[in-house]
Image 1 (cartoon, rainbow, N blue to C red):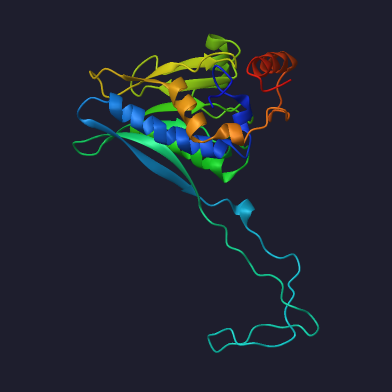
Image 2 (image 1 turned 120 degrees about the vertical axis):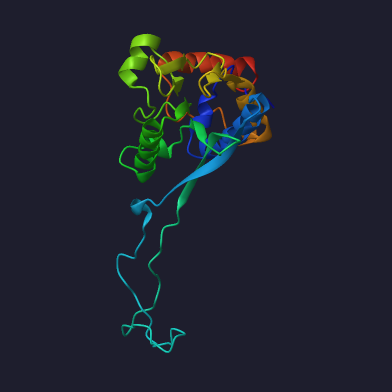
Length: 263
């Protein structure tokens, strides 16, 4: 079943669906970009890795068993009389998020990075956001082009093009694509996307003198929606998270009724 919406489906922005959609889009973008790239370039997937200290879990009160048992190394486990062991310190696992790198086949030189903004990237104060900002700075200092696709309404602005500049040139928008071209002026380019809009095609810059390649985002989202069976995961009768404005809600309900998903 295809998505009922002409562009981004706002019900896909939820915590239970978007992480899977994020990874699917990276995979589909990799295929689409590689199909469009000229000889001498290849798109490869990479992972950003971080450990969020907020995910560390330790028992508030240590409770230990009455019987003193061996720890397997000749030692003895700590015990308190009358108490039963119920917990232990847990070590947080690293979080990994995929993104794309377009590299030259000769010398494996990084030319362009392609990112789909994630929920973790837009949570203020979290390690995922600071890790993302660090990567943006690395790209800028290294002269690497950066393409960012933001399909999330929630959270603070995170793409490399400043929000004030986006608003000045694009007006109001719900989602956007930001492209930073290294070493040229003007270096920032963007497309604003309203909820009722079809997702756009956008150009991915390569080396100087090499024409950019164009990728159409909407067919990739449509394919990801169907292959991920998101229609089975989303209940359009539930409130959208994050909430819609009154105008957006009326528009969305009209779309869903027309598709037979609301009565």
